[in-house]
Image 1 (cartoon, rainbow, N blue to C red):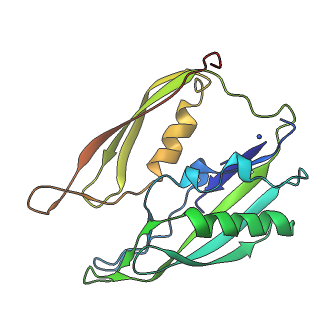
Image 2: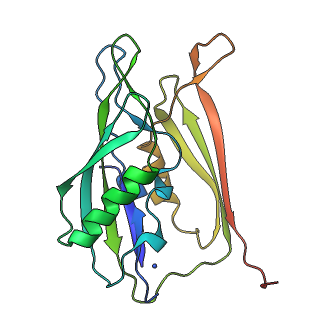
Length: 204
């Protein structure tokens, strides 16, 4: 089954699992002067996990809007488009309200203010179940001074990740990050290398 977190973005054997749709990530960001909408602090893919998938095998897509306080905490979750299953909708909001954290929105003076963030969780069930296999990825991300992504290049994709390079790069280019700063506090561009790997060994 699988749970996909789609920022609007992820995905489990005869088990179902929820995962945010990484490739569908849409960060609601409105710029006016220096004003900026909330941005994820951490990995959105960890907000809703396969083990969160309710029993029963229901499937669907839950769209939500999160209210984010000036300190980056989620204060409420509103379902904006139902999956058609109340338990899936309630689980999506509960997990996002519990786990999602943000860099807060800022006004045109750069001060932290309350804001909103829209995303979606796609609940799907894989008839053959979830399978893990060895594999590794290395992604190089060029981040602009304002936190936007200039480019993403998957330079390694082996094992279970092979063949997914274009999808991963497309999802990466839609991401936004907190700006990096030099030692004087000025926003600067940076090149980021992200490595992931899965190894499978005999149980002790």
